[in-house]
Length: 189
Image (cartoon, rainbow, N blue to C red; front, side, top):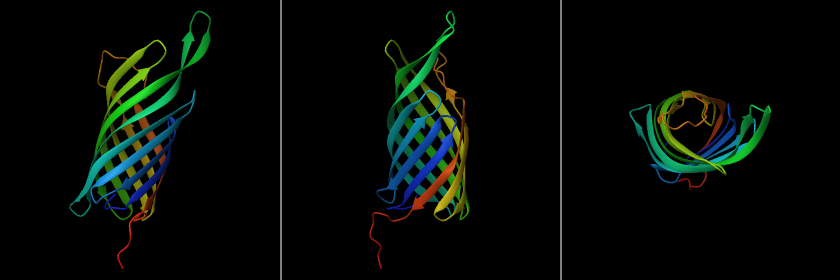
């Protein structure tokens, strides 16, 4: 986003399932974001909200810093090796995040780097686990004006070696982003 009134709607497919994102610039430098996921394989949902600061530098540069929190439920599978029996357990997932980003943006393509820091807490009926993760990602957007196709790749590192949380170490997604400019602000004639 570049100015007050800009909005972005993004939909993507990733390893974990379907993801949707909404972002809106409430001022020329303050933005709100809302992300949601429907998780595949065993099922679950997740949502997060954030607020951030964004700006421009030079002729092609953009930067932003968002922070926020999220909550969801995930169905995890476990097995009993003795009986060869699988069971699915619903767990709660809480997240806090800090996401800086720097980008080069042109008329047709944008390339950004985001080293997201996340604190994850997972709790079930008889356990609680938490850990910090570092998730550096590269995102390429290609298109023109209001519609861009997105490709994202990254890694996820568990920063707490004493806390084991099963997670996906590789982040990959493809999708599309639609830009809506000045949807809630009056245009000056």
